[in-house]
Length: 115
Length: 114
Image (tube, rainbow over all chains, first blue to last red; front, side):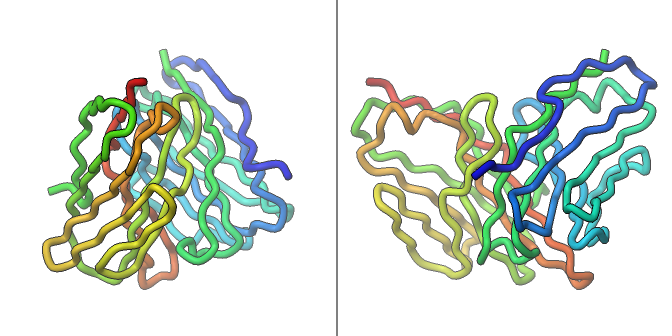
């Protein structure tokens, strides 16, 4: 079975540009969460989506947005990129929102470099 | 104060050693605790989770939670070179709005030397 797939794996963008990152959850998983992991830090929560609805948002500016599609795949969009947005962006999927019971599975992430 | 504090190390031990990884947390709303392992260039992989105080064992791994002191520990027995990775502790929170998030520590980089 395929795990959580993210694309692209690596990306280099210029300050001020926008970027779209994509995530396909494990088949049957309806919840997708996005995390940002800056080098040397733990992942930080950005969004959670369940059944195409936003269920939670972390402490990130409005430049960050996301959506979930009918097939439960998801996109993370970041506008007006800053150097500080350089990070590993992780997508995690689970059957429902109760992660302790069903567990989160993370993808390998998209490494975004802003220059 | 950060919600989850974790000593980033790095930690280097010989093969076969017992490894102890520790975190402290703040805020006492209903929550659960997890340990993730992250290999280089990979996403975090769930090792163990627990709701309550006490110990939970899985093979060579033991997770320990002390809610009175807000302390989380992971013990690895008979450590192997394949255990070399970054270990992340995390606190899970379910908010009133029904959303859920994991709050991670910084991670501790562990190297097990053959």
